[in-house]
Length: 137
Image: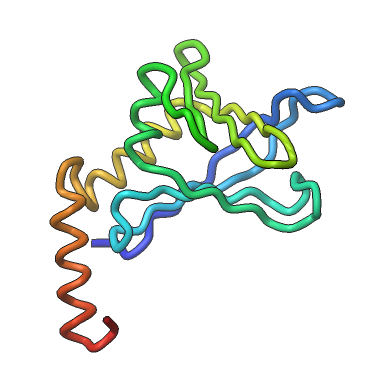
């Protein structure tokens, strides 16, 4: 089982003054943290010039492919048959990005190969047991 699943994706920034433009981002999934997905954005798109990482539920990402999902800092929704929109809400404002739905589906499929949906709690128990066995707990 892989320890980390990373997938590079191209995102389009929406609602920018110069119009949407493509930038790279990376979706991350770690079976050791089976409920969470992380998305990393490059420094050039942040307000302070630092790389930005957002963590959110894997289930939220999956739900957002079928219809609007999320009420908190991260929201996901379909945008036509081929695109998915993600909104990231922070004190500084809202960032909206659009990515290919096929990329999201591929990433989720890879994550489900590592930890099937509904087996996250079992995976957490295994990780805790291994940590205890190797004295990392």
